[in-house]
Amino acid sequence: MRQITLGIDFGTSNTAAAVLDGGRPRVIALEPGKDTLPTAIFLDYADRRTLVGTAAVQAMIDGRYGRFMRSLKSILGTPLARERRQFLNEKLTLLEIIARFLTEVRLRAEAATGAHIKSVVSGRPVHFHSANPQRDRQAQIDLEECYRMAGFSDVRFLHEPEAAALAAGPGKGVGLIVDIGGGTSDFTLFRTAGNGIKIIASHGVRIGGTDFDRALNLALVMPQLGLGGELKNELGPGRNDVPPALFHELASWEKIAFVYGPDAVRDAKRMVRLAVTPAPLKRLVTVLEMELGHDIAFAVEAAKITANRDGQSDIRLDPVEKGLRPHLAQGDLLSGLWPYADKIRAAAQDTLATAGLNADQVDRVIFVGGSSLVGVIDRLMRATFPQAEFEYSEVFTAVVDGLAIAAGETA
Ligand SMILES: Nc1ncnc2c1ncn2[C@@H]1O[C@H](COP(=O)(O)OP(=O)(O)OP(=O)(O)O)[C@@H](O)[C@H]1O
Ligand SMILES: [Mg+2]
Image 1 (cartoon, rainbow, N blue to C red):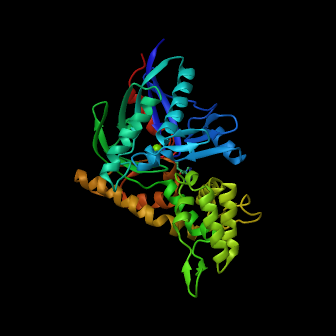
Image 2: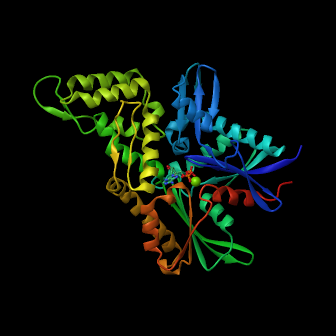
Image 3: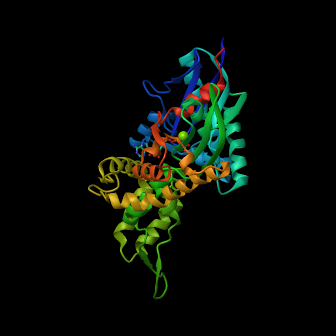
């Protein structure tokens, strides 16, 4: 059978695969009619099956018996990745679970191309962990191990924004890829060289749309579950703040699946007993007992996208309590996202600094990634690069197109 090399953009939120076909990238429909596959997994305990993508999300929404996980890319390089955990009757590491997801990507790509696939050119962020070099190095080691477990014997990596630059190709003067995804923001400066491009510098920070979701969740939803409240002392007078740690985990996509369990429910019930205002903490008990953390995270993400488009939205928390719909106003979106947008701007400027260029020497800015559609980011980038022309690439497939180009002509 034919052997081909697959380009895979394993994203925090969405995954895509492509091959080079007749000199051009061809994105593979990993789900019928879709260019991307949600990076989501559901271990179905009733059927003893592993579901991925939209089927996994649907199983979670339907409340099937099992374990749902999303944003697993974020745990690469951390100690969580190699911890063995009990999932019904099996003990698995999260790396093994990612490998199941990548196996499914390989099998679907093989079915779509009719070829054998053992080689992959995978994207990786410039920094998985921009604040921790040791974790940053470990993350690629972890991801490579996942690919090997998934049946890929030849694994190469390319920085995601450099792949997007390859896909963008030659153009006027100096180009800057600004790729704001679910987990990281990545930048590549490049210029035209002959028929192709020359990379000048790349840089990245661990900030993305899942951070926006967490910030909005902590500001608008978690207070409805008790965050910010007070507890009476068990013995004697005095009050304490409700401990925030659990709420932070419940608002972080990659940690939600591991919050649940009898200990968390017991702690929450104890807090209800001690609460100055018990009603919000009763909702927390419901969320933990019914395992509604992902439902909340999806509701926040949907509201973020709607408010970004329409100026405002409601966060629909009916699964938690009928009619519970905190309002997400334009001001909340701005105040929640601004600190992150500002750090993303600083990282774009650092990219220029490493190359010794000024912002007004950038001729083209090419937006990539779902979070580049966020209005605050668009405005900030336009203010930062006043001389540049702005282009929206195929925001969800520019990276995988470039990975397919790097993977080379299929045999
Ligand atoms: N219209 C939109 N407005 C605002 N945000 C959006 C929109 N569409 C998608 N997003 C956000 O974009 C993010 C996903 O983008 P993308 O698919 O590019 O990320 P990814 O490639 O999976 O992540 P990464 O490259 O960081 O690993 C999510 O956080 C999602 O909420
Ligand atoms: Mg991406």
